[in-house]
Length: 171
Image (cartoon, rainbow, N blue to C red; front, side, top):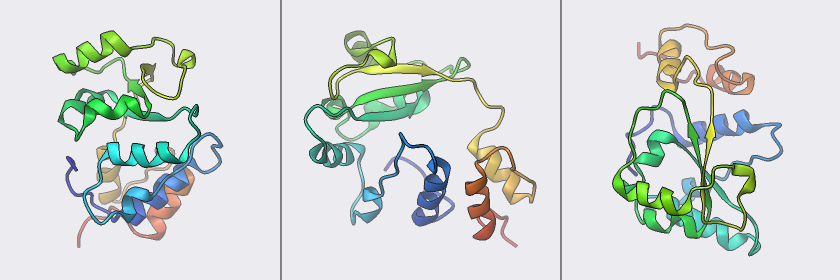
């Protein structure tokens, strides 16, 4: 719990993520963190998921570069790689430098080719992505000002936002 309180309810965010991955067979949405009656930490979720998988099954935690650089502030972050591989989505324009703790981890656990990751957990790999010209914050601002975000979010997500009147400016 190192993020600000979101603008919309957890169930709405869950529904939007489900809409975003609808029709993508290799992705699934897990809602176990919403059922917890205490703060939810990534390590707890990974331990729970890992306990349900076969011993050799791979598990991936996907993070953006900024979130990855903040890992040393996470609860029990040093244990993450015992349970999963970490895929870091990196943009060419990323300008955050990793802290020393992560530099050492990268030197020991980095794999340049994500398709070469072996075993169920333990490595870090990077996936380069083309930066979009819009951020989630900008999308929320567009919605609050009544402007269209069509083509900026999946159709199912937009339909949900409109049906539930999310991210509108207060009257």
